[in-house]
Length: 150
Image: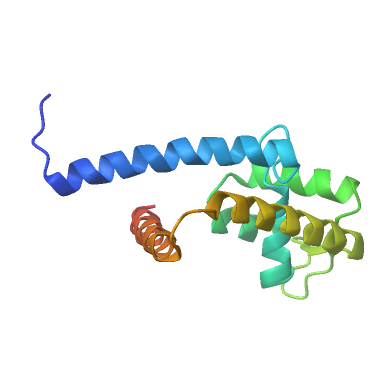
């Protein structure tokens, strides 16, 4: 089936392909640095969520990604076994406990954040800040449009 595309549609297709390609490479760099687990879980991202948003339930974390609850549960169990997070009572729900970061988890998060910041500095070298801001804005708008369709 042949479809007619607009220049904007073609540009969006090219942008999506570039985002996917860059995303695969970012994931590979994350695995290399330890911010992404070998099976693909985002350790740094989950810890960042707890640092910036406070304790959350596993289903709440999964909905915010959006990924399967089982994926987040696997990551949570791994991080708990490493002593980086813990479960705390949830005053709003007796059976769905909250996931919270531990002191050790905060130390590991801070170290990971420093590694991510160093990688960002390296990647940003020789790129104009205005170009990066426009790219971030465009990707953010596309992400919001995608979220509205989920």
